[in-house]
Image (cartoon, rainbow, N blue to C red; front, side, top):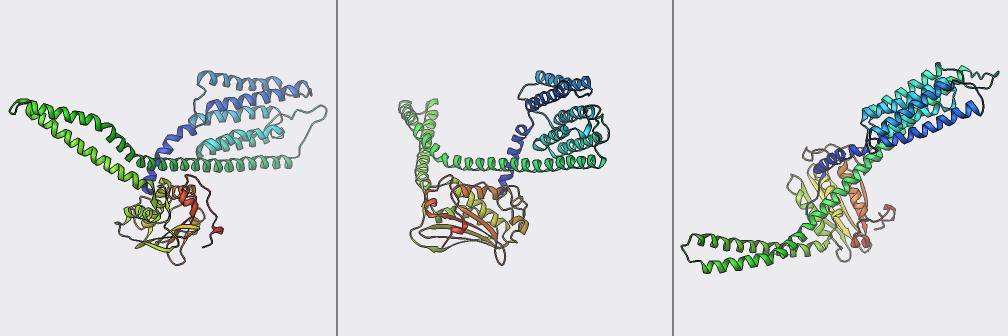
Amino acid sequence: MTHLGITGISKWRFALVTGMRESQRLRLATLIRLRWLSVAGQTTACVCVAWVLWWPFPIAPCFALIGLSVGLNVYLATRYSGSYRLSSNAALTVLTFDIVQPAGLLMLTGGIQNPFTVFLIVPAVIASATQPPVTVAVITAFAVAATTVLAMLHMPLPWPEPEVLMLPQSYIGGLWFAIVATLVFAVIYIYRVAAESRTLADALAATELVLQREQHLSALDGLAAAAAHELGTPLSTIALVAKEMQRSVPKGQPVSEDVTLLVEQSERCRLILRRLSSLSSSSERHLASLSLMALIDEVAEPHRNFGVELDVEVIECIGSEPVAARNAAVISGVGNLVENAVDFAESSVVIRAGWNHAWVWIDVLDDGPGFPAAVLDRIGEPYMARRESRDQRSGGGLGLGLFIAVTLLQRSGAAVKIENRPTKGAVASIMWPRAAYAENPREGRSAEWSEFDL
Protein backbone atom coordinates (compact mmCIF):
# COMPACT_ATOMS: atom_id res chain seq x y z
CA MET A 1 0.00 0.00 0.00
CA THR A 2 1.37 3.37 -0.95
CA HIS A 3 0.19 6.78 0.08
CA LEU A 4 -0.08 9.96 -1.94
CA GLY A 5 2.59 12.39 -0.72
CA ILE A 6 2.80 16.16 -0.85
CA THR A 7 4.46 16.10 -4.28
CA GLY A 8 1.55 14.20 -5.79
CA ILE A 9 -0.98 16.54 -4.18
CA SER A 10 -0.18 19.29 -6.68
CA LYS A 11 -1.36 17.06 -9.52
CA TRP A 12 -4.63 16.34 -7.74
CA ARG A 13 -5.04 20.05 -6.99
CA PHE A 14 -4.46 20.97 -10.64
CA ALA A 15 -7.00 18.41 -11.80
CA LEU A 16 -9.55 19.59 -9.27
CA VAL A 17 -9.16 23.30 -10.02
CA THR A 18 -9.27 22.67 -13.77
CA GLY A 19 -12.37 20.52 -13.44
CA MET A 20 -14.23 22.90 -11.12
CA ARG A 21 -13.67 26.17 -12.96
CA GLU A 22 -16.72 25.54 -15.13
CA SER A 23 -18.95 24.88 -12.12
CA GLN A 24 -17.79 28.09 -10.42
CA ARG A 25 -18.84 30.32 -13.33
CA LEU A 26 -22.00 32.35 -12.83
CA ARG A 27 -25.15 30.84 -14.31
CA LEU A 28 -27.01 33.17 -16.65
CA ALA A 29 -30.35 31.86 -15.38
CA THR A 30 -29.50 33.15 -11.91
CA LEU A 31 -28.94 36.69 -13.19
CA ILE A 32 -32.12 36.55 -15.27
CA ARG A 33 -34.20 35.59 -12.22
CA LEU A 34 -32.63 38.34 -10.14
CA ARG A 35 -33.29 40.86 -12.88
CA TRP A 36 -36.96 39.85 -13.05
CA LEU A 37 -37.14 40.49 -9.32
CA SER A 38 -35.51 43.88 -9.86
CA VAL A 39 -37.96 44.71 -12.66
CA ALA A 40 -40.89 43.86 -10.40
CA GLY A 41 -39.54 46.05 -7.60
CA GLN A 42 -38.78 49.00 -9.90
CA THR A 43 -42.22 48.79 -11.52
CA THR A 44 -43.97 48.66 -8.15
CA ALA A 45 -42.02 51.66 -6.86
CA CYS A 46 -42.77 53.75 -9.96
CA VAL A 47 -46.47 52.86 -9.92
CA CYS A 48 -46.83 53.69 -6.22
CA VAL A 49 -45.03 57.03 -6.52
CA ALA A 50 -46.85 58.06 -9.70
CA TRP A 51 -50.42 56.89 -9.06
CA VAL A 52 -50.66 56.28 -5.31
CA LEU A 53 -48.68 59.18 -3.87
CA TRP A 54 -49.15 61.31 -7.04
CA TRP A 55 -45.66 62.75 -6.76
CA PRO A 56 -44.32 64.21 -10.00
CA PHE A 57 -41.35 62.57 -11.74
CA PRO A 58 -40.49 61.64 -15.38
CA ILE A 59 -42.66 58.53 -15.67
CA ALA A 60 -42.11 57.70 -19.36
CA PRO A 61 -38.27 57.66 -19.27
CA CYS A 62 -38.35 55.54 -16.12
CA PHE A 63 -40.64 52.93 -17.67
CA ALA A 64 -38.47 53.00 -20.80
CA LEU A 65 -35.44 52.00 -18.69
CA ILE A 66 -37.49 49.27 -17.01
CA GLY A 67 -38.59 48.06 -20.45
CA LEU A 68 -34.91 47.88 -21.45
CA SER A 69 -34.31 45.40 -18.61
CA VAL A 70 -37.35 43.39 -19.69
CA GLY A 71 -36.11 43.28 -23.27
CA LEU A 72 -32.63 42.15 -22.21
CA ASN A 73 -34.10 39.41 -20.04
CA VAL A 74 -36.33 38.13 -22.82
CA TYR A 75 -33.43 38.13 -25.28
CA LEU A 76 -31.06 36.28 -22.97
CA ALA A 77 -33.71 33.76 -21.92
CA THR A 78 -34.56 32.88 -25.52
CA ARG A 79 -30.99 33.05 -26.84
CA TYR A 80 -29.26 30.87 -24.24
CA SER A 81 -30.17 27.74 -22.30
CA GLY A 82 -30.89 27.84 -18.59
CA SER A 83 -27.65 26.00 -17.76
CA TYR A 84 -25.43 28.41 -19.71
CA ARG A 85 -22.55 29.77 -17.62
CA LEU A 86 -21.04 33.17 -18.27
CA SER A 87 -17.37 33.79 -18.89
CA SER A 88 -15.69 36.55 -16.89
CA ASN A 89 -16.03 39.05 -19.74
CA ALA A 90 -19.68 38.19 -20.31
CA ALA A 91 -20.42 38.47 -16.59
CA LEU A 92 -18.66 41.85 -16.56
CA THR A 93 -20.90 43.09 -19.39
CA VAL A 94 -24.14 41.85 -17.83
CA LEU A 95 -23.33 43.15 -14.34
CA THR A 96 -22.27 46.50 -15.79
CA PHE A 97 -25.74 46.80 -17.33
CA ASP A 98 -27.21 46.01 -13.92
CA ILE A 99 -25.41 49.09 -12.59
CA VAL A 100 -26.16 51.40 -15.52
CA GLN A 101 -29.90 50.68 -15.65
CA PRO A 102 -30.72 51.43 -11.98
CA ALA A 103 -28.28 54.36 -12.06
CA GLY A 104 -30.34 55.82 -14.91
CA LEU A 105 -33.54 55.40 -12.89
CA LEU A 106 -31.90 57.03 -9.86
CA MET A 107 -30.64 59.94 -11.95
CA LEU A 108 -34.24 60.65 -12.98
CA THR A 109 -35.55 60.36 -9.42
CA GLY A 110 -33.24 62.25 -7.08
CA GLY A 111 -29.85 60.63 -7.51
CA ILE A 112 -28.03 59.69 -4.35
CA GLN A 113 -30.81 61.25 -2.26
CA ASN A 114 -33.12 58.45 -3.41
CA PRO A 115 -33.04 55.73 -0.72
CA PHE A 116 -32.96 53.02 -3.42
CA THR A 117 -29.37 54.01 -4.21
CA VAL A 118 -28.24 51.14 -1.97
CA PHE A 119 -29.26 48.72 -4.73
CA LEU A 120 -26.15 49.74 -6.68
CA ILE A 121 -24.26 47.52 -4.26
CA VAL A 122 -25.98 44.33 -5.46
CA PRO A 123 -24.09 43.75 -8.77
CA ALA A 124 -20.76 44.30 -7.04
CA VAL A 125 -21.72 41.84 -4.31
CA ILE A 126 -22.71 39.23 -6.91
CA ALA A 127 -19.39 39.73 -8.69
CA SER A 128 -17.40 39.42 -5.47
CA ALA A 129 -18.98 36.05 -4.71
CA THR A 130 -18.49 34.52 -8.16
CA GLN A 131 -15.90 36.35 -10.28
CA PRO A 132 -12.09 36.62 -10.39
CA PRO A 133 -10.39 39.60 -8.71
CA VAL A 134 -10.00 41.71 -11.87
CA THR A 135 -13.70 41.51 -12.70
CA VAL A 136 -14.62 42.26 -9.09
CA ALA A 137 -12.34 45.32 -9.06
CA VAL A 138 -13.80 46.67 -12.34
CA ILE A 139 -17.42 46.20 -11.23
CA THR A 140 -16.70 47.79 -7.84
CA ALA A 141 -14.96 50.78 -9.43
CA PHE A 142 -17.87 51.23 -11.83
CA ALA A 143 -20.37 51.13 -8.96
CA VAL A 144 -18.36 53.74 -7.03
CA ALA A 145 -18.18 55.93 -10.15
CA ALA A 146 -21.95 55.65 -10.67
CA THR A 147 -22.56 56.62 -7.04
CA THR A 148 -20.25 59.62 -7.41
CA VAL A 149 -22.02 60.80 -10.58
CA LEU A 150 -25.42 60.44 -8.89
CA ALA A 151 -24.21 62.61 -6.01
CA MET A 152 -23.47 65.47 -8.39
CA LEU A 153 -25.80 65.02 -11.37
CA HIS A 154 -29.47 64.14 -10.95
CA MET A 155 -33.02 65.43 -11.28
CA PRO A 156 -34.99 66.51 -8.18
CA LEU A 157 -36.20 63.87 -5.78
CA PRO A 158 -39.94 63.22 -6.25
CA TRP A 159 -41.70 65.19 -3.54
CA PRO A 160 -45.19 66.70 -3.09
CA GLU A 161 -45.32 70.30 -4.28
CA PRO A 162 -44.94 73.05 -3.28
CA GLU A 163 -42.53 71.48 -0.81
CA VAL A 164 -39.05 70.79 -2.14
CA LEU A 165 -36.69 68.55 -0.18
CA MET A 166 -33.22 70.15 -0.09
CA LEU A 167 -30.62 68.07 1.71
CA PRO A 168 -27.47 69.89 2.88
CA GLN A 169 -24.29 69.19 0.91
CA SER A 170 -22.54 67.93 4.01
CA TYR A 171 -25.23 65.31 4.47
CA ILE A 172 -25.04 64.30 0.80
CA GLY A 173 -21.26 63.96 1.16
CA GLY A 174 -21.69 61.79 4.21
CA LEU A 175 -24.30 59.69 2.41
CA TRP A 176 -21.92 59.20 -0.52
CA PHE A 177 -19.12 58.13 1.82
CA ALA A 178 -21.42 55.71 3.66
CA ILE A 179 -22.59 54.05 0.43
CA VAL A 180 -19.07 53.77 -1.00
CA ALA A 181 -17.63 52.47 2.28
CA THR A 182 -20.40 49.90 2.59
CA LEU A 183 -19.89 48.87 -1.03
CA VAL A 184 -16.12 48.39 -0.67
CA PHE A 185 -16.40 46.61 2.68
CA ALA A 186 -19.14 44.26 1.46
CA VAL A 187 -17.21 43.39 -1.70
CA ILE A 188 -13.96 42.65 0.16
CA TYR A 189 -15.69 40.68 2.91
CA ILE A 190 -17.82 38.55 0.57
CA TYR A 191 -14.90 37.97 -1.82
CA ARG A 192 -12.72 36.68 1.02
CA VAL A 193 -15.46 34.46 2.44
CA ALA A 194 -16.32 33.05 -1.01
CA ALA A 195 -12.65 32.45 -1.86
CA GLU A 196 -12.04 30.62 1.40
CA SER A 197 -15.17 28.53 0.87
CA ARG A 198 -14.05 27.55 -2.62
CA THR A 199 -10.56 26.73 -1.39
CA LEU A 200 -11.92 24.59 1.42
CA ALA A 201 -14.30 22.81 -0.96
CA ASP A 202 -11.45 22.07 -3.40
CA ALA A 203 -9.24 20.81 -0.59
CA LEU A 204 -11.94 18.55 0.83
CA ALA A 205 -12.61 17.16 -2.63
CA ALA A 206 -8.90 16.41 -2.98
CA THR A 207 -8.98 14.68 0.40
CA GLU A 208 -11.81 12.47 -0.78
CA LEU A 209 -9.88 11.64 -3.96
CA VAL A 210 -6.79 10.67 -1.96
CA LEU A 211 -8.81 8.42 0.31
CA GLN A 212 -10.62 6.90 -2.64
CA ARG A 213 -7.27 6.16 -4.29
CA GLU A 214 -6.06 4.37 -1.19
CA GLN A 215 -9.23 2.33 -1.02
CA HIS A 216 -8.89 1.38 -4.68
CA LEU A 217 -5.34 0.18 -4.05
CA SER A 218 -6.60 -1.95 -1.16
CA ALA A 219 -9.23 -3.48 -3.40
CA LEU A 220 -6.70 -4.66 -6.02
CA ASP A 221 -5.88 -7.82 -4.04
CA GLY A 222 -9.54 -8.74 -3.92
CA LEU A 223 -9.79 -8.24 -7.67
CA ALA A 224 -6.74 -10.48 -8.15
CA ALA A 225 -8.40 -13.24 -6.11
CA ALA A 226 -11.62 -12.92 -8.08
CA ALA A 227 -9.73 -13.02 -11.39
CA ALA A 228 -7.77 -16.11 -10.31
CA HIS A 229 -10.95 -17.86 -9.24
CA GLU A 230 -12.93 -17.03 -12.37
CA LEU A 231 -10.10 -17.88 -14.78
CA GLY A 232 -9.15 -21.13 -13.06
CA THR A 233 -11.91 -23.32 -14.52
CA PRO A 234 -11.65 -22.27 -18.21
CA LEU A 235 -7.86 -22.44 -18.02
CA SER A 236 -8.01 -26.00 -16.65
CA THR A 237 -10.25 -26.96 -19.56
CA ILE A 238 -7.84 -25.39 -22.05
CA ALA A 239 -4.88 -27.21 -20.46
CA LEU A 240 -6.73 -30.56 -20.55
CA VAL A 241 -7.69 -30.19 -24.22
CA ALA A 242 -4.15 -29.09 -25.12
CA LYS A 243 -2.63 -32.17 -23.47
CA GLU A 244 -5.10 -34.46 -25.26
CA MET A 245 -4.14 -32.81 -28.55
CA GLN A 246 -0.45 -33.26 -27.72
CA ARG A 247 -0.93 -37.00 -27.18
CA SER A 248 -2.97 -37.43 -30.37
CA VAL A 249 -0.70 -35.46 -32.75
CA PRO A 250 2.34 -37.46 -33.91
CA LYS A 251 5.74 -35.88 -33.38
CA GLY A 252 7.23 -34.28 -36.44
CA GLN A 253 3.91 -32.93 -37.70
CA PRO A 254 3.79 -29.14 -38.41
CA VAL A 255 1.06 -28.76 -35.78
CA SER A 256 3.06 -30.59 -33.10
CA GLU A 257 5.22 -27.61 -32.15
CA ASP A 258 2.18 -25.34 -31.89
CA VAL A 259 0.39 -27.81 -29.62
CA THR A 260 3.49 -28.16 -27.41
CA LEU A 261 3.70 -24.37 -27.13
CA LEU A 262 0.01 -24.23 -26.21
CA VAL A 263 0.55 -26.74 -23.40
CA GLU A 264 3.57 -24.84 -22.07
CA GLN A 265 1.78 -21.50 -22.10
CA SER A 266 -1.32 -22.91 -20.39
CA GLU A 267 0.91 -24.31 -17.64
CA ARG A 268 2.57 -20.92 -17.31
CA CYS A 269 -0.84 -19.25 -16.94
CA ARG A 270 -1.72 -21.76 -14.23
CA LEU A 271 1.45 -20.88 -12.28
CA ILE A 272 0.66 -17.16 -12.58
CA LEU A 273 -2.87 -17.68 -11.27
CA ARG A 274 -1.51 -19.80 -8.41
CA ARG A 275 0.83 -16.97 -7.41
CA LEU A 276 -2.02 -14.46 -7.63
CA SER A 277 -4.20 -16.63 -5.40
CA SER A 278 -1.39 -17.05 -2.87
CA LEU A 279 -0.57 -13.34 -2.90
CA SER A 280 -4.21 -12.38 -2.52
CA SER A 281 -4.78 -14.79 0.38
CA SER A 282 -1.77 -13.56 2.29
CA SER A 283 -2.58 -9.93 1.48
CA GLU A 284 -6.16 -10.41 2.59
CA ARG A 285 -5.01 -11.68 5.96
CA HIS A 286 -2.47 -8.88 6.16
CA LEU A 287 -5.00 -6.23 5.20
CA ALA A 288 -7.58 -7.41 7.72
CA SER A 289 -5.84 -5.70 10.65
CA LEU A 290 -2.74 -3.67 11.40
CA SER A 291 -0.89 -3.24 14.67
CA LEU A 292 0.45 0.18 15.66
CA MET A 293 4.10 -0.71 15.06
CA ALA A 294 3.24 -2.35 11.72
CA LEU A 295 1.49 0.86 10.74
CA ILE A 296 4.57 2.90 11.63
CA ASP A 297 6.90 0.53 9.76
CA GLU A 298 4.68 0.71 6.68
CA VAL A 299 4.59 4.51 6.52
CA ALA A 300 8.29 4.89 7.44
CA GLU A 301 9.78 2.38 4.99
CA PRO A 302 9.37 4.49 1.79
CA HIS A 303 11.36 7.36 3.38
CA ARG A 304 14.47 5.56 4.70
CA ASN A 305 16.76 6.20 1.72
CA PHE A 306 16.72 9.96 1.31
CA GLY A 307 19.79 10.97 3.28
CA VAL A 308 17.88 11.40 6.56
CA GLU A 309 18.21 9.03 9.48
CA LEU A 310 14.75 7.72 10.36
CA ASP A 311 14.36 6.07 13.78
CA VAL A 312 11.34 4.51 15.48
CA GLU A 313 11.07 4.57 19.27
CA VAL A 314 8.52 3.13 21.69
CA ILE A 315 8.45 5.35 24.76
CA GLU A 316 5.63 3.69 26.70
CA CYS A 317 3.69 0.47 26.28
CA ILE A 318 1.16 -0.37 28.95
CA GLY A 319 -1.03 -3.30 28.03
CA SER A 320 -1.16 -5.13 24.73
CA GLU A 321 -0.15 -3.42 21.50
CA PRO A 322 -3.20 -1.78 19.90
CA VAL A 323 -4.46 -3.41 16.72
CA ALA A 324 -6.98 -1.80 14.37
CA ALA A 325 -8.59 -2.52 11.05
CA ARG A 326 -6.48 -1.25 8.20
CA ASN A 327 -7.63 2.29 7.46
CA ALA A 328 -6.44 4.06 4.33
CA ALA A 329 -7.16 7.44 5.94
CA VAL A 330 -4.83 6.75 8.89
CA ILE A 331 -2.06 5.34 6.67
CA SER A 332 -2.22 8.29 4.30
CA GLY A 333 -2.43 10.87 7.11
CA VAL A 334 0.50 9.52 9.14
CA GLY A 335 2.48 8.91 5.94
CA ASN A 336 2.10 12.53 4.83
CA LEU A 337 3.31 13.79 8.21
CA VAL A 338 6.35 11.49 8.06
CA GLU A 339 7.07 12.57 4.49
CA ASN A 340 6.87 16.23 5.50
CA ALA A 341 9.28 15.66 8.40
CA VAL A 342 11.78 13.91 6.11
CA ASP A 343 11.51 16.69 3.53
CA PHE A 344 12.37 19.43 6.02
CA ALA A 345 14.73 17.61 8.41
CA GLU A 346 18.43 18.38 8.31
CA SER A 347 19.73 14.99 9.44
CA SER A 348 17.24 12.94 11.43
CA VAL A 349 13.57 12.17 11.99
CA VAL A 350 12.25 10.28 15.00
CA ILE A 351 8.88 8.55 15.15
CA ARG A 352 7.86 7.95 18.75
CA ALA A 353 4.90 5.77 19.60
CA GLY A 354 3.23 4.65 22.76
CA TRP A 355 0.04 3.35 24.25
CA ASN A 356 -1.67 2.70 27.53
CA HIS A 357 -5.12 1.57 28.55
CA ALA A 358 -6.69 4.92 27.59
CA TRP A 359 -4.68 6.42 24.73
CA VAL A 360 -2.67 5.61 21.61
CA TRP A 361 -0.25 8.21 20.28
CA ILE A 362 2.38 8.85 17.59
CA ASP A 363 4.85 11.76 17.58
CA VAL A 364 6.84 12.68 14.45
CA LEU A 365 9.86 14.86 15.28
CA ASP A 366 12.36 16.45 12.89
CA ASP A 367 15.44 18.63 13.35
CA GLY A 368 14.63 21.06 10.55
CA PRO A 369 14.07 24.82 10.70
CA GLY A 370 10.60 24.53 12.24
CA PHE A 371 7.63 26.69 11.38
CA PRO A 372 7.50 30.49 11.23
CA ALA A 373 5.09 31.96 13.76
CA ALA A 374 2.70 33.11 11.02
CA VAL A 375 2.51 29.58 9.61
CA LEU A 376 1.89 28.01 13.01
CA ASP A 377 -1.26 30.09 13.36
CA ARG A 378 -2.60 28.57 10.13
CA ILE A 379 -1.64 24.94 10.60
CA GLY A 380 -4.30 22.72 9.06
CA GLU A 381 -5.61 25.30 6.59
CA PRO A 382 -5.40 24.37 2.89
CA TYR A 383 -2.78 26.06 0.68
CA MET A 384 -1.12 27.83 3.58
CA ALA A 385 2.34 29.42 3.39
CA ARG A 386 5.30 27.04 3.19
CA ARG A 387 8.51 26.71 5.13
CA GLU A 388 11.85 26.25 3.41
CA SER A 389 12.76 22.62 2.82
CA ARG A 390 16.13 20.96 3.14
CA ASP A 391 16.14 20.45 -0.62
CA GLN A 392 13.72 20.62 -3.48
CA ARG A 393 12.79 16.94 -3.52
CA SER A 394 9.32 17.61 -2.38
CA GLY A 395 8.61 20.00 -5.20
CA GLY A 396 7.20 22.51 -2.74
CA GLY A 397 6.33 22.56 0.91
CA LEU A 398 3.41 22.54 3.24
CA GLY A 399 0.02 23.23 1.77
CA LEU A 400 -2.73 20.91 0.72
CA GLY A 401 -0.72 17.84 1.82
CA LEU A 402 -0.73 18.86 5.48
CA PHE A 403 -4.39 19.81 5.31
CA ILE A 404 -5.22 16.36 3.93
CA ALA A 405 -3.13 14.64 6.60
CA VAL A 406 -4.82 16.53 9.44
CA THR A 407 -8.30 16.08 7.95
CA LEU A 408 -7.90 12.33 7.42
CA LEU A 409 -6.52 11.77 10.92
CA GLN A 410 -9.27 13.81 12.53
CA ARG A 411 -11.83 11.74 10.68
CA SER A 412 -10.32 8.63 12.22
CA GLY A 413 -11.02 10.05 15.69
CA ALA A 414 -7.55 11.47 16.38
CA ALA A 415 -6.51 14.86 17.69
CA VAL A 416 -3.58 16.38 15.80
CA LYS A 417 -1.25 19.03 17.20
CA ILE A 418 1.68 20.50 15.25
CA GLU A 419 4.17 22.86 16.87
CA ASN A 420 7.83 23.79 17.04
CA ARG A 421 10.16 21.94 19.41
CA PRO A 422 11.77 23.95 22.22
CA THR A 423 15.24 23.76 20.67
CA LYS A 424 15.13 22.97 16.97
CA GLY A 425 12.70 21.43 14.54
CA ALA A 426 9.00 20.63 14.65
CA VAL A 427 6.83 17.90 16.12
CA ALA A 428 3.50 16.53 14.88
CA SER A 429 1.58 14.74 17.62
CA ILE A 430 -1.32 12.39 16.89
CA MET A 431 -3.42 10.92 19.67
CA TRP A 432 -6.44 8.62 19.67
CA PRO A 433 -8.59 7.40 22.52
CA ARG A 434 -7.74 3.70 22.56
CA ALA A 435 -11.33 2.67 21.91
CA ALA A 436 -11.57 4.98 18.90
CA TYR A 437 -8.26 3.67 17.49
CA ALA A 438 -9.37 0.07 17.86
CA GLU A 439 -12.66 0.79 16.13
CA ASN A 440 -10.87 3.05 13.63
CA PRO A 441 -14.05 4.60 12.17
CA ARG A 442 -14.02 6.50 8.93
CA GLU A 443 -15.28 9.58 10.69
CA GLY A 444 -14.93 10.26 14.35
CA ARG A 445 -14.98 13.00 16.86
CA SER A 446 -11.55 14.29 17.72
CA ALA A 447 -10.51 14.30 21.32
CA GLU A 448 -9.60 17.58 22.96
CA TRP A 449 -6.01 18.06 24.04
CA SER A 450 -7.20 19.33 27.38
CA GLU A 451 -8.57 15.84 28.07
CA PHE A 452 -5.24 14.08 27.55
CA ASP A 453 -4.01 12.87 30.91
CA LEU A 454 -1.15 10.48 30.55
